[in-house]
Length: 270
Image 1: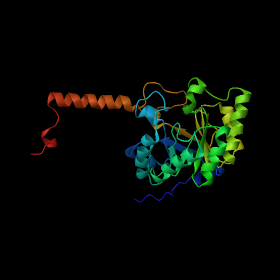
Image 2 (image 1 turned 45 degrees about the vertical axis):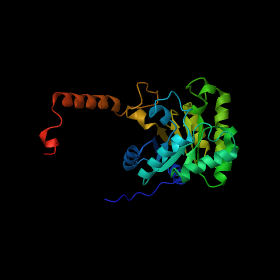
Image 3 (image 1 turned 30 degrees about the horizontal axis):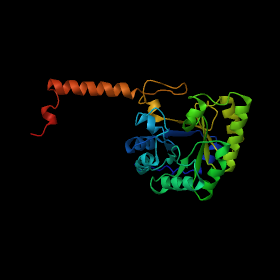
């Protein structure tokens, strides 16, 4: 049966917020996973720089480059028919100048096939985001715990604990909306300020460790399927243990090969 769902664009999310419809985002880094998520009916797929950790086994996202991100983005975009695909701009691909930021953002669309880009930073990034959106490239903002600034934060720590921090987050959210962001990730921030931000914006918020009162949720797919190591963040609900299942299947396959049970006659060409 043909898929009759409408293609979701960056403009769709504001309409969803106005209707009170919760928005669902997951990450994908390859064709097969993206195809499955799209078939499942998620609204958006982020090709996150988190791939540096969950795909390449790095300790953080800082060494991920454009040359790493673009092939993964292209593979995901090729798999998806309905969901909105956003490419995550890696560390130092947008921080140094407007010209470099615009050039690299454009590559996510022209080479990666994405509908837009995500970049990290609060009010200090508003002018740069405005320059990107002014030339027609949709931007998703990202405030709170921004992993590319992990060394500044001194680790993965919850943000928005003080009045000063809460004011900064709210001012940043309003500034990024004014700069043209179509939506915003709120990561690892106190639920009360996440709620206030969500209620103060016309554009939708996508929480990751920001409570239930944002306009939607975004998580790393590997985390919820048990394919990202033993550490499970407080905000992650694991729906499956892929790591354990993969070890079980590989162990059984190895036993079958070593015993001569695989391949059987029916699995061989006579």
